[in-house]
Image 1 (cartoon, rainbow, N blue to C red):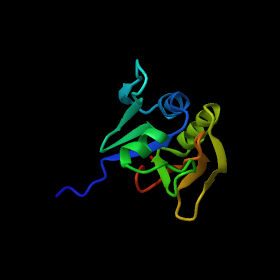
Image 2 (image 1 turned 120 degrees about the vertical axis):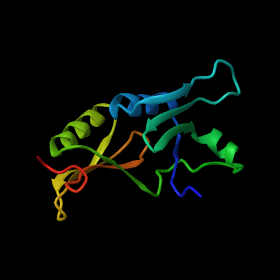
Image 3 (image 1 turned 120 degrees about the horizontal axis):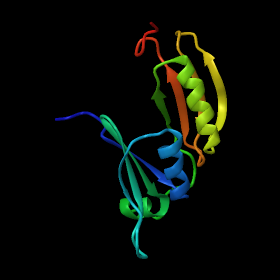
Length: 140
């Protein structure tokens, strides 16, 4: 049995704004995107992040798909992390994401274990850690 997580689906309120944030801000490669041409269809977007696919799906449509009355319009109770290759890339990505509507919750700083990180929320409140880890990407 494969014990890997393969998809993370984010329920979104404003599909087009969130699509732009993840596609243009993070510059995640878009694997598939559907923008409905008629009423009753829901848009979706899939980003290929190697072993995991990040999906965007309208909040109300996801609730209906899951068989629940409504999906709470609140930020997730998890933190997603995005590892980059250097300290400089942390700063660059944080700045770029702010230009796409992110809100910095903790500026980038060196942390006790030797890494460098900052926190932000996407335009709908999903918490992200943008981090450089020396164990994952050693300095030259």
